Amino acid sequence: MRIVVVGGVAAGMSAASRARRHNPEAEVAVFERGGEISYGACGLPYVIGGDVPDLGDLIARTPERMRGQGIDVRVRHEVTGVDAGARTVTVLDREAGGTRTEPYDRLLIATGVNAVRPEWARTDLRGVHVLRDLADGRAILASLKGATCACIVGAGYIGLEMAEALHSRGLRVTVLEKAPEVAGRMLDRAYQQRVRAELERHGVEVRCGTSVEELVGENGHVRAVQTDHGPVPADLVIVAVGVKPNTALAEAAGARLGETGAIAVNTRQETSVDGVYAAGDNSESLHCVTGQKVHIPLGLTANRMGRVAGVNMAGGEARFPGIVGTAIFKTFDLGAARTGLTQTEAEGLGLDAVSVDVESTDHAGYYPTAAPIFVRLTGERGSGRLLGVQLVGQPASVKRVDVVAALLHQRGSVGDLFELDLAYAPPFSSVWDVLLVAADRLG
Ligand code: FAD
Ligand code: NAD
Image 1 (tube, protein in one colour):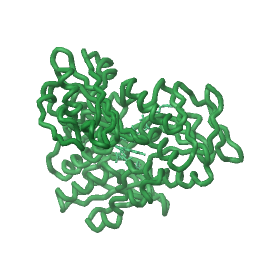
Image 2 (cartoon, helix red, strand yellow; image 1 turned 90 degrees about the vertical axis):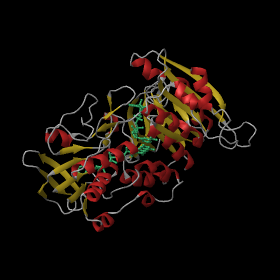
Image 3 (cartoon, helix red, strand yellow; image 1 turned 180 degrees about the horizontal axis):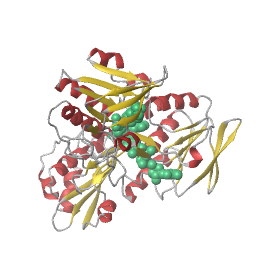
C-alpha cells in the first residue's frame, strides 16, 4: 500500500500521520512544493505584529522528524500532474530540477487555496504582498524595514488581523474595502460596524466602498494605491481580497468540482475518482445547519478532513460529519465570533429567521475587568430551531460561541440553549450568562 499526499501543511500532515498510525505497514510519501511543512499559518499575523518572536515558532514538525516517524517527506517537490488511470503522479524537484513519476495506491490532494490576485496586484513592485505561507510572512517582515505607511486591500479575516499587526509595528495603516462595510462575510451589519469602530479607535483609516484601480511605483517600489476616490500613500501593500481553492491537480485527475468551485468530496473525503481523496481548504464541506455544500476554508476543518482521509486511505473507516460555520478573529482589543447563520445569511436562504440583540457585560458587572459584550442570537420563527449567534466583545469572552456551535451540531433549539447549565462565577460570567439572556428573550 503506497499513500501519496500532495501538500504538507494542515490537511496533508494530519492525513500522513493518521495513515501511518492506522496502518504502520503502509508506505506514506508527502510532496510539498514549499520549503517547510506542518506550520500554523494562522499565527503569521502575530509574528508580523511582533507578539510571537519568530516564524520558526509556528513550525510544529520538521521533515526530519516526520522521516523519523517513517513518513517520507520531500519539501521543494511540486506535483505537476496526475494520471489517475495509471495511478501515478509527476513530481518536479524544484531544487535539483528534473521530474519523475511516482506510483500511488491512494492519493490525497491537500493543496489548500491560492490567494486571489486581481489584475492590478500582478506586479513586480517591491513592497506588495499576499499572505498565505511562511515565505510570504518572511517577505512581509523584510518589507517592514523602513516602511512607514501600509495599505491593506480587503477587510476580511487577513485584512483585519494584519491591520492590528502593522499598526503594532508603528506603521500608519489604511484599510481599503470594496464592500460597504468591513468583515462583510462574517457578521451582520451592526456587528461589522463595531469592528470598524475598533479599527478607527486605534487610528486605522478605513475606507469602505472603495475600488483599487492601480498600484503606483517609484524606482521599483510601491509608493501609493490609486483608488476610485484618489491615491492613498503606501510603501507596504497587503492584498487580502480572498482565496480560491487550488483544484488544478484534482481537475487533472478528472475529479468533480462542486458548485462552490471547491473539490466535491463525500464524508470519507473521497473525490469522484477512485483512489483519489481531497481534504482541507481546497474541498467543500457539508453545512450541518443548511444541509448545503459550502466552501469555508478554516484550520480545524482542514485538520479534521485530513485525519479522516488518512484513516480511510490506510484502510480504516472514518467520516467527516460537516461544519456549522464557526469562526473567530481578533482585531486590537476586540474579538468577534460567529457560528451557524447570521440573520442576513438566513434570510438569503429564504428561512423565516428572527434575531435578538443583547448588550451586557461579559462577567459580573461589579467585578473589575467586566467589559461590554454584544450578542445577536438567531433562530427560526415557529420551529424555535437555533440558527446561529454572533458575538463581539473582549477577545476571550467571545469564545463562548462554542456553546452555540455544540448545540447546532446537535440540531438544538433556542429552548435547549436556555436550559443549559453553564458555568458561573463573577470573574467569568453573570449568573444568567449573556447567551442565556439572549435565548430567554428569543424563546
Ligand atoms: P494549506 O495550509 O494551504 O497547505 C497546502 C499546501 O499544499 C501548501 O503548503 C502548498 O505549498 C502545497 N501545495 C499546493 N500545491 C502543491 C503541489 N502541486 N505540489 C506540492 N505541494 C503543493 N484558519 C482558522 O481556522 N483560524 C485562523 O485564525 C486562521 N488564520 C489564518 C491566518 C492566515 C494568515 C492564513 C493564511 C490562514 C489562516 N487560517 C486560519 C486558515 C488556515 O491556515 C487554513 O485553513 C489551513 O492552513 C488549511 O490547510 P490546508 O492543508 O488545507 O492548506
Ligand atoms: P476574506 O474572504 O475573509 O476577505 C476578503 C475581503 O476582501 C472581503 O471583505 C471582500 O469584500 C474584500 N475584497 C474583495 N475584492 C476586493 C477588492 N478588489 N478591493 C477591496 N476589497 C476587496 O479573505 P482573506 O482575508 O483574504 O482571508 C482568506 C482566508 O484566510 C479566509 O477565507 C479564511 O479561511 C482564512 N483566515 C481565517 C482567519 C480566522 O479564522 N481568524 C484569519 C485569517 C485568515
